Image 1 (tube, one colour):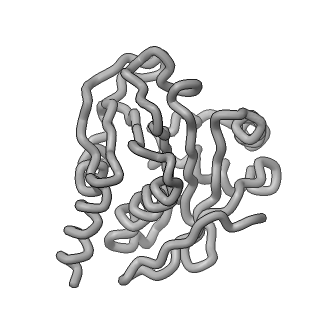
Image 2 (tube, helix red, strand yellow):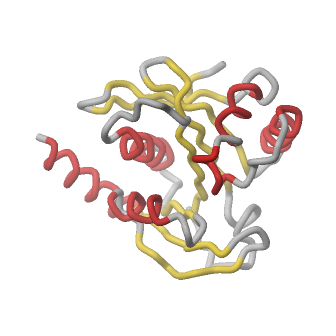
Length: 192
């Protein structure tokens, strides 16, 4: 599969994104999305075939795509990119030109690495902002997912407000390129 982006974290090393293979990666993704730690991914009851079907649907969609994230060459996270004017947020917020929607999921682990999730979201945002047409990244996590709200704030997201989606009440947040770069500069300065 094709690597589309790499970023090296000063402490944790290389993070990369490659195109997702809906069928070839289905068993791995199934283990991730059905893990209790992935409850907010809303696929707890899916079997492997349903996971493959969902990611084939995403791969075929003109405004939504998925990528497998690698840490030091090993699958470790999932990232999705979507156009909120056509997917997920249609009619639910004031869409602006250059808005890109994002989801990410870290693989479950019995040996968590300090700062790993922050490094993942930083790599995903760096990838999205590497496209000069991306002006803002938009996210809509479940209002109950307080851990991701805190993480989003660390990397520059600002809360717009609560929205009602069919599957959840979500906290709509946006991050501009300038907000992300300022947050990353602050984070890297704090680590130095």
